[in-house]
Length: 261
Image (cartoon, rainbow, N blue to C red; front, side, top):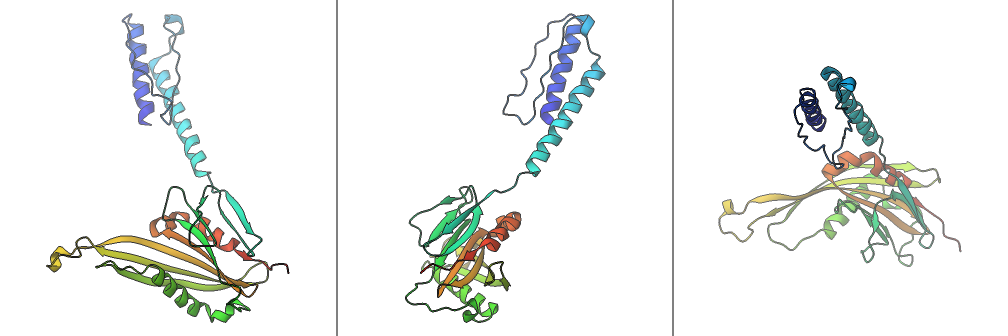
């Protein structure tokens, strides 16, 4: 709207000077990089002169309608999903189309957001030779499975740095029967990492502890082919609040599939 008002002032100044027979030194219009633009072609002859109040009304209405259209277009944007199917290991899920696959990660498959580097999705599959799962209920009730998942996360994030402290909590545990007739567990945990900015300082007041990161971890557990499958979503806590619906769509899409003999 500020760009529109600036352009309005420029047009009015040109119109007044032209009507008075004075040379009009026009300030250039906003470039195409601006969100809104106005294209005006005022005639310099008195026969085609437009009253100043009419010019203001036309420009202001153009600005308002342009802004409404821009806001509506932005609000209607939605995340597109793509399906990933692993026929060799026997699982599938949907993920945001713009996420990129990272090879070499310590997981069966790994995708991450190209802009939010702490936001990613992965799948872990237990070894077929060492696991004999018949159902996800072999893990116990969802509450017990949640404790095991949290312990595994804390083990993986264990740090040898001095002054590092982790705070963790289980936010929710639940079970559901999907449309494939199988039971899945869903676990949500939060982990915060704190560290001192000067862990070697002698005086306690010099060892200021600050928050390093605050993340939510979403896990979906399923069993098939005598194996335990775990879909993992990692996301910063503040980002989760903005993308919760999309992340839950990913969780709900996870399926484990029977492998052909």
